[in-house]
Length: 463
Image (tube, rainbow, N blue to C red; front, side, top):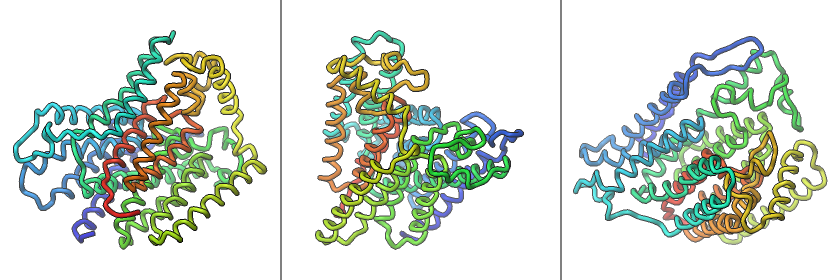
C-alpha cells in the first residue's frame, strides 16, 4: 500500500465515522424504552452515503486530470452504495439497487459511449456463461405462477425475483479491475466496521439506561431480557433488526476484509481492523443469540485460515483433514448435548409442515405465492429453509435449478481459485438451511449482489 493510499484509507474511515455520528446524533429516549434514531431512512443514512462517495471519487482519481476517466464513477459510486445499503434498511437496498440498475441500463443502451472510454461501449458487453444458471432458477420459480391461486402475492414475489435477471445483466455492462474491486470491498468493510461499532455502543447505552446486567446477555440458552428480545438492545437504532440476516451481511463484510488482507499481508492497520471486526461480530452474535451467526463465523474463520497457510500441499491437506475432524466432533456434540439454545421447535414444525405439502405435491408445488396460506402459520410465511421452501412452492424443478446454480457457482469458485467466493457460498449455504433468503428482496439482493461482486474479482495468484 502506498502512502497516499494509507492516508486516503484513514480519511475514508474518519468520514465514515463522521457520517455515522451525524446519522445517529439525536437519539429518542423514553422511560423503559430502547434508544432509537429519529428521522426517515433518507435522513438517517444519507450522511453515510455521502461520506462513502467522497473518498471513493477522491481516492481512485486523485492524480488524474482526464475528465473521461471519471466516467467509471457512474457505476463505482452506485455499486459502492448498494454494497453498503445491504447492512442498512430494506428501503435503502431497494432504492440503491434501482439507482444502480438505471445507471447500468444507461451504459447498456449506449447513451454514454465516448471514444476515449471504450471499456463501457456496448461492444464490450461481457456476459458470463455462469449467469445462465440465475436465469434458469428464475424461470423455474416464475413458471409456478401458472397454477397459483394467490395472484397478488405471486406478482409481488415475481417482481422481487426479477433481480435474478437484472443484476447479472447490470454487471455485464462494466468490468472491474482488481484495484477498483479492492477499493469497493474496502469501502464496504469499513462501513460494516462502523456499523458493528454503532451496534455495540447502542447495546451498552440501552443496558446502562435501563439499568440491566451485562451478564443477562451471556446465558447459553434462548431467553428474553426485560421482556424484550436480546437483539432489540443491539439493533434498536436501525430500521432492520433481523439477527440472522444481519449476521449474514456482517460475515460477508468480514470475507471482504480477509480478501483485502490476503493481498496486503504487511498492513498492520488492516490486520488490526480485521481482528477488531471479527471480535465485534462474535460479540454481536452472542448478544443477539444468533445461532447461525456463531456457526457462520466459526466456519468462515476455519476456512479463511486455509488462505494464509503455506502453499505446500501436505500442510494444506493436513489442515483439510483437521477441518473434517472438527466437523465430525461438532456434529457428535450437537446430537448428544444439544439444548434449548440449539433446538428450535418453531422451525421443526415448519419443516414438518413443508415436507407434508411436498409429499402431497412433489412435482408442481403449491404454486408461487400460495406458500403462506398452505403453511397456515400466523408467525411465519415460509418454512425457513431455502431448499424445502423452493420445493414446496415451485416444485421439483425449482429445487433442481437451485442445487444446479449453487453447484455451478461452487465449481466456478474452485476452478478459478476464488476462495472468497467459495467461503461466501459456504456461509450462504449454512444460512439457507435455517432461513429462506430468496423469499425476501433483501435476501435476494445480498446473495446476487455479492455473488456477482465476488465473481468479478480476477484472482491472479494461487490460493
